[in-house]
Length: 245
Image (cartoon, rainbow, N blue to C red; front, side):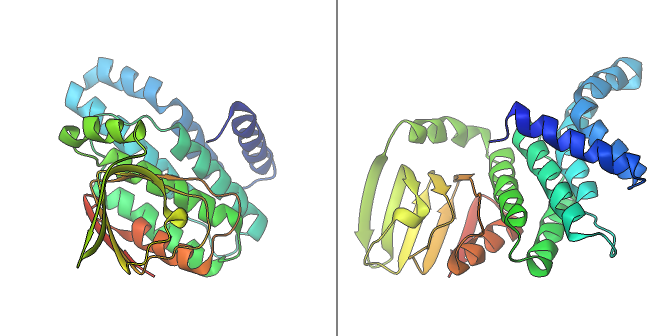
């Protein structure tokens, strides 16, 4: 998770870039991301409604991140890394409420991250930001009826594990994805908290049903980890996601 030092460093870096004539418009978007809640309240008092305010706040995070990741063709590798770091901070600081963010905007972020993965596959910032995006997206779209059960999973190592022809089923488990070394080629995760730190993923087929993710990467993940992360980032229906290595 991003801390105050990271936030200060990121803002300082972006400020320096603005002073060097790097996209003032993009800088304004970043500033808007940090202060949008206060702006939203002001707009509400002027001519908004509660639903409009909720929508504005829900959409603010993906819109700001989307703008940050819209790298011009001539953007240097260093600047791309800085923009990804800023996007990572914003995703980590996002407050998730009852209102779901606009799916089109969220998919735009996914598309831009996938582009960066193809362009800079060896850049740690690409995968760290992808992980932060996965965490944000799956939490943002989690149904209210499932949230309490997911909270219960945080306090349990595992409520239930079963196995059969379809493979292993993990029910309300708090587990490490790369730590699962089962003999089954398929695993189903039902209302689980799934952690991932970049190691090898040994399961060939995975089915995530109403899950949330805790992805935290400091280095480039393994090849099979990259494959799974791409599928999680691309997924549109977060309540039911199939992934394979």
